[in-house]
Each structure stands twice: as structure tokens, then as C-alpha cells.
Length: 136
Image 1: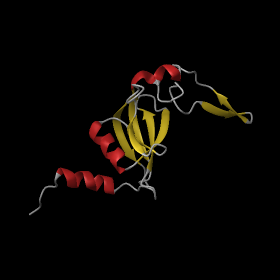
Image 2 (image 1 turned 120 degrees about the horizontal axis):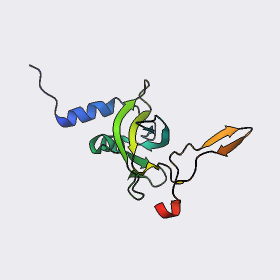
Image 3 (image 1 turned 30 degrees about the vertical axis):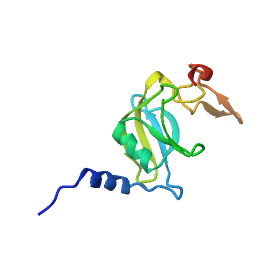
Image 4 (image 1 turned 180 degrees about the vertical axis):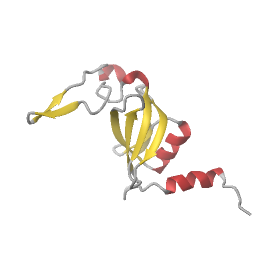
């Protein structure tokens, strides 16, 4: 007779499929679920990934602070989760998110990827939507 899995067993099994690096981290890419634009990249540990799935919002791990941080906890620019994907090697996460407030970058821009390599230099292409001093 087959027994049903407990909620804890289900959580553990999907997290066990993820290949975290030697520091217990995995790169997590946030992508706008409507446009496909890459908004940012940050790191997650096992707990952050589990909380992201449970809370349906992006939760990251700050390497500099050595702690979890919920995207938007100080700025209000929350990333609402629409879909969570794991790549073929199981070592990169992509999240399809709704970026509340339209700003993902701490510089006040839509995306952290606002510079383009052109003619031998990095050129800033995206405008600041809100002064970071007003955000943080």
C-alpha cells in the first residue's frame, strides 16, 4: 500500500533536487512575467527558496549581510512570484515575477541591467525612475 507524502516530505523532495553551491547558494534571476525582461540577479539559500515558494514573493539571501531579505521590505518594490523555474543542471533559478512599483534596481531603475557595452565602453541606457534617496 502506498502512503501519501507529508507536507514536509514534499517540501524536502523538491528542494533536494536543487544543486546549491559550496556556500549553500544558488543564483536566482528575476524576470518580468509580462515582458520577459531580466530585472535582477541575486542569491538564494535553501531557506530563501523555500520561503519564496511558500510566500509567493521573492526572498533572497544577502551575502554581505549574511541574512535573508524579502525584496521590497524597505523599498516597497516587492516581487510577486508567478512562476518558479529550475534550469537543466538544477543550479540556476529563474523566477517570473510581477515587479510591484516597476523598480527592481537599488539605483531606482526598472532593471539592474541598464548598461550596454557599446564602442568599447559601458553606456547607461535606462533612466532612473525614482531617486534612490527617496526609496531607501
